[in-house]
Length: 88
Image 1 (cartoon, rainbow, N blue to C red):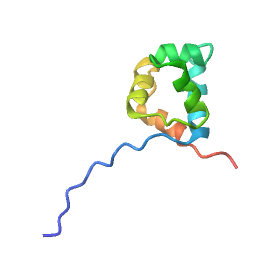
Image 2: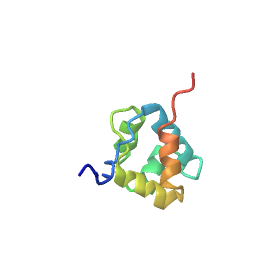
Image 3: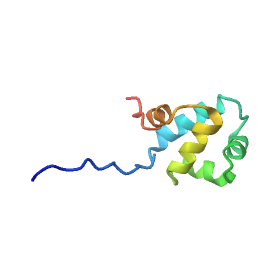
């Protein structure tokens, strides 16, 4: 019997630094004045935002959910922005 159960693909961290910066900038446009204010809104330590900006930290699932809850942007849209390719 060759039937396979469809496995749910594991969450892939958003580790594209360019896309993650686009995502952070989009969230900043929704109200927070700077990265420190954004960190407070997302309830993370300010260095977390800095590390994401510099490509040293991916955006994990829990942070993605916080972005969705706080800024009312769909998970799908957040992922779409974060995975955008660098314009040629």
